[in-house]
Length: 234
Length: 155
Ligand code: SF4
Ligand code: SF4
Ligand code: FES
Ligand code: FES
Image (cartoon, rainbow over all chains, first blue to last red; front, side, top):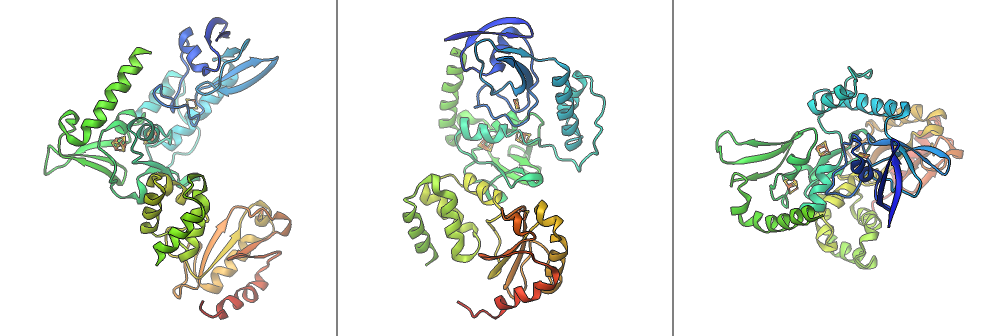
């Protein structure tokens, strides 16, 4: 069933229960996101996609990536409150990850010059969980996870040793918005590339990531092709 | 031997994925910590991926991946206990058994940890040794609380 809602005054028809972000896309309104990806289940961890909604005469802030639309909902993506929150989140992230260029680019777009918070010892991971969720939901191996909690939370393999289930597909490298999972080549054997995250090595690939020709990657690539085909059909 | 015990625990919980936390708690009871081999074994037997299990083991403070002493001392440093003087108590314990938070004594008798609220704020400041709760603790009481555990014979 389609329901009518308005986004910044613009009327759109959208499937009931779809997240607000789908409606925004349909209306051509851009909402900044960090932990959202079409191929994955919504997660709602970065809070950057906050918008204000008016429903049953009540105004409130919700995350656009996972909040379902309802009949008569009015969505506002550029109010003072929304801008204030985005600014806060970006400034906090800039303090956590001062060297991440993509965050600086986002900040610039939003007209944020600098962070008012003290810079932390630099990490590049914003804990968006995209890599972890992609590895679990799409690749289907769950080689990496989010471990520990609070300020110690980090992405790591079990026991922080090279994973024995990682297939070296590179999806995590590709999807990471901050570029903190690297693929580096071995100095001695240049055709060997290694996935690295901070101190942890994931998997070494001796096949130059020519996945189609590799027995390990083959099955995965078959699946991947199906996923991509399905995605295009939608 | 240990693996037989683990099998029994797994059977008790009918290999249910939803019971994984209880399973890990019971398994930790065997050696007072969760060795890597043990976690790998649970993962295999439960057919639950190791990443999940490692996430859980590192998320909850009750789980320890490193060997712990025979007795675990947990000092609450939640708001109520902090205001009640938890810091002074902690310092007194550290002086008495000569280890810092997160460490284990050389004789493997005590491990010291802090927790963020034991849900017994009315009794603040609280500390727990193994399963025994001690309320309204002050630095003067520490030695008296600890000494019976030292004397306890080996099991
Ligand atoms: S490279 Fe390894 S960790 Fe990264 S997504 Fe692929 S399987 Fe998962
Ligand atoms: S490594 Fe990258 S994708 Fe993974 S949680 Fe950190 S920032 Fe997100
Ligand atoms: S994109 Fe919605 S919370 Fe991250
Ligand atoms: S703060 Fe110590 S029990 Fe709640």
